[in-house]
Image (cartoon, rainbow, N blue to C red; front, side, top):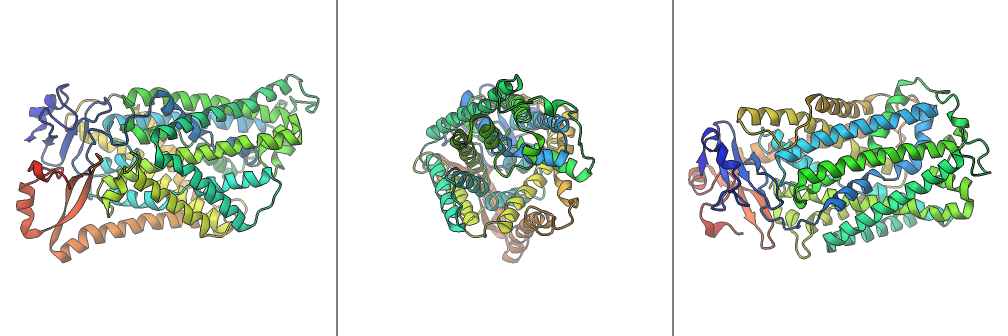
Length: 576
């Protein structure tokens, strides 16, 4: 059914629309001469998702289920927010900034940027509430031309750079530190692979158990922070003889502040990454009942609560440890803190908490990555779409999880430890920052399209000044890697040219562009065909697009037999 925006706008938002489209179970199409939009309702109680027809179809009944409730959404964010940074990052932050006062001022800046990000992401989700995958969806819908370019580019980089290897290696190093054993290269790799596999199993077997583990780990992380905060404030009150002068670091708190532009900027980059993970629940939006209301409360609660705890943890560190101890620390700052308060044996035992924290970060990261990869597969731009989207046999994203495990396995095993591994980890961040800039800018494009089409305001809308602030923060993340470090052009975490990871990241993006041109322009012209999308419904309930080749002479007939989304107008052809 095709109608104009002006004639059918009211029907699209009518409460009579059933999951999947109108009361006949078919999607509603709205055409204004430039773009084709489709309105569909998912099964998560949200308003209609109105999107360009090239986007992956809405799954009216999500085969992954709707298991993510209020607490699960909250802890998906908390377990991502509290990674390993708060247990070790204060040392590098103090080295960069020089003073206690400036270190404490930087954390609220990270909070402000995170809150701005939540506001922007909530508006995106309000436009497409029955689509999981977050940026996968938002880029697809913001940049509709050239058709399929951004879905191709982002899908390829998502698949290539989805690994969780760095966290696995961190857990391995913590475990060996607890046992006072210096591992060989392959001992470290072996433990890292064991961690990867053990954490991946529940995600493949059961979404419900994965969420329960996430909730449990979230509680453990909060307890861990309180095991830093409470002793620290007891010490601040003079409760430990091992801390004779707990207020020393707070006298002349800004003494020693450094004015080096690179160190100040680099510290801000690290602060922003320390808050990374506030967006994790957005990636599972179609598994949440009433996603806008739920995510708005849980995401803001998580990031504000964790920011307060971060500040209190830092105050505790500075109350117990001297600046020299923190700067000179060669171990986890939290372990050094516990060592001074409770003694060596207790400190070594408590190191299990950062281990669990890092392991739970792997779990939560895999939850988000698997949903993004599955949604990228549902766009139809990757080969073998059934593999990417399948939920067989356990109702979990098994195909996507297999990809996460395989890529992480390769990154752990293939490069030697040290410079090569650090380079690959750094490479992972830059394309993500680049696409985040494009995603944030894309919000204004979506607003423009919806205003031109006279569509209603979303359930949640970000202030424009907030969106601009978040865009500026992300541009900063893209620009910073190009600024030479103070120690020279080879003073990087991987030991050679500091801009190599950014150049390689841009190379991946450009490679995606070349692939798109060859796949969607050159080969169709040589082969005398055009790409068309078709909707495929798998037996377990997954719905996906697939791009197929239609000979030029058959285009009119094919278009006549399919609606703009790619559904066959013959019901008997709906399954494949």
